[in-house]
Length: 328
Image (cartoon, rainbow, N blue to C red; front, side):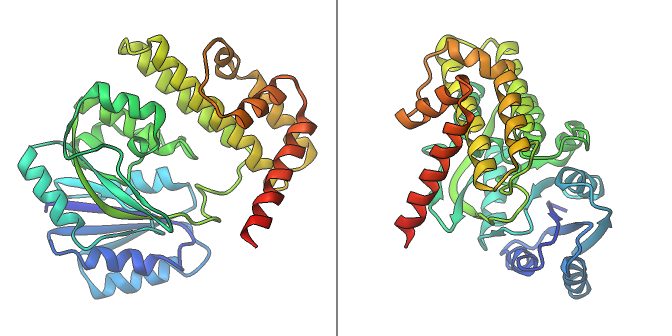
C-alpha cells in the first residue's frame, strides 16, 4: 500500500464527512484512511463508522479522550502504507493531492515531502518560492519565522521514519506539531517541496488549536526552548538568527496574553499568566537582542516588562472594540 492517511477526530461532526469525502475523491486510489476518534461526545464516531461501512479502505479506531498527539500516534502504529500523511478532521484535501505527492516522491526519491496549502477562508500559503529540495539551513530559518514548516499535515513521510521518530503522548497542545516534526526533519536533513496548494486548512474558531487554553504559553515556551537547543546543537545560533528567534518568541507570548484577555480569563488567571511569562528565561533573554517588532507590539512588550498588566489589558480591549467597529 502506498499511502496511509491518519485523521485524529474530536467533536468534528460538522466537518468529518467533508474530510472523508476529500480523501475518497482522490484520483489515486492506493490508500487507507484511519480515523481515530478521540472520545468525541457528538456524532463524529457514528458518522465515521458509516463511511467505513461503505468503503473497506476506511478503518475507524476509538479511544478515550487523550488529545490529538495520542490519536495520531495510535493511527501511526496501525498504519500499513509506505508513506504516512496526517489530515485534521476539520480540514480537507484537493482532489489531486495524493497523485501530486506520489509524483513528487517518485521524481525526487525523497523520504519526506512538503506541499503548500490554502487557508479557508483566506489565501494560499507558499512557504518556499519554488519546487525543489529544501536544505537544512533553509528550513531551519523557516522553523524560526514561519509555522508552516512546523505542521504535520502539510507533509508525507516514510512510515518507518515516522515510527522511529515518535514522541511521547504527553506532548499535547499548541506545540504538538512542532514536537512531532522536528525529530523527523533532523533525521532526514532535507526534504522535497512541491509548490501546489493541495491542503485546505480551515480556521475553526472553537477548535482546540485556536481556543484559549490556560497553559498555552507554557507549551509555546517549551517548544521554543527545544528549537533553541536544536539551533545551538547545529551551530546555527548566530546573532541575526537569534534576533529572529526571540522576535517570534516574544510575539507569540504577547499573543497568548492578548488571547486570554479577549477570551475573558479571570483576574487570577491573567495575573498568573503575566507572572509566568515574565519569569520565562527566554522572555528575559529577549531583552538582549534587537527585536523586529512593530511599534504597538514593542509598547505592549514594555507594558509586560514594567508590570503594567492593567494597562496592557486596557489596550487589548480597546483594540478589540476598534476591530469590532470596523467589521460593522
